[in-house]
Length: 100
Image (cartoon, rainbow, N blue to C red):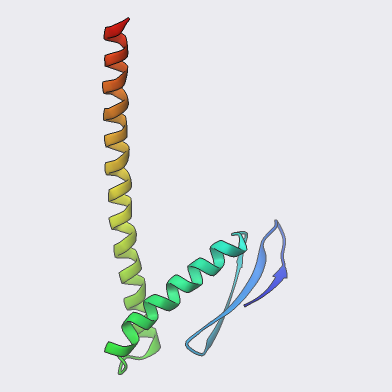
């Protein structure tokens, strides 16, 4: 992975996935970029052994679908957590008010 400084604190990131080089501009911290790239590579590798006959664009689409599914699941968990936190705060406020 190589970097070149861009405008607005963005920089050009070049990376390789299964022999194909890609470039994008990002302002994300280096650690975050590395984590994202590792996640993408690991998703590709999960699909590669079982689908070695698939061409890379189909593996890319399957990878996107898997990651989107995980994102939807995480969004639902976050929403559930927020609802539960709000319920807990409301219950605490009521308990405090009843003690006053």
